[in-house]
Image (cartoon, rainbow, N blue to C red; front, side):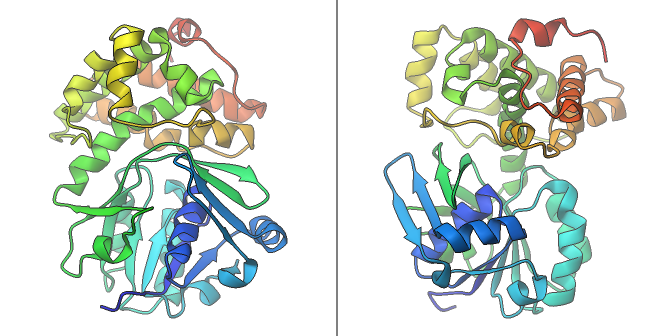
Length: 338
């Protein structure tokens, strides 16, 4: 494989624009499949990618290919990064099947645990790799996308070593053996996406409060019991096992802050993608997070009342269309049985 590959991003939202912009800054030809509004925004302002560590790259519209036509984006791509929401995976898989070359490698950089199966079923002639993006990206407007938390992108281990090809000092990709365990470990952490969305607080402010962390810990404990019944072993991307996370979250504020600072860096502006979805009136991925835990609990004859309550609260917020409801942990716990 040569050092530079043609990369297409299927679904250029916050993650897709940030990763695509960083890869273009690293020398790869990059094409973004995007909505007309975003294309107009980048054509007017360019694409700016920044990170909490001080990284900054500005790309002119001429440096990155933009289109809402899948044929124009997928044709000739060596690697296609799928960054659409989970509900949109079947549709994007069909478009890739119609427009992409058979030798294009498909990499899922999506939340959730079932997207790769959907892609593989629809794309039997393609190599499809699972991936996990640990960090949060904020869309700040005017073509500006800001990475607000730390972490390396993890990819399923493969013979060509796509992770090594894509990796650069400012955007590290690493290959791992147990990507399924990693994805389930990420799902546990992503349970806080809904809590952050319901709180309306910046992530760092939310996690600084023990009452929010205790609620998060109880969410994880509930999910761990369900995941165990499913026969899945979630894999933490930190030195601590996933089962130890609830204990860490419930520590006193000062001790938690000291331990957390050694594992993850959080920009003061960081918020969850689900908060952004509520603010922008978009549907969330709640069905693929707490909703999945509820579905698995039902399959195994278990109960997941806290997950069910949070699903209902997020759906209420989606229907209201007024952004975050600004709830407290006590208000979330006080909601009646769903």
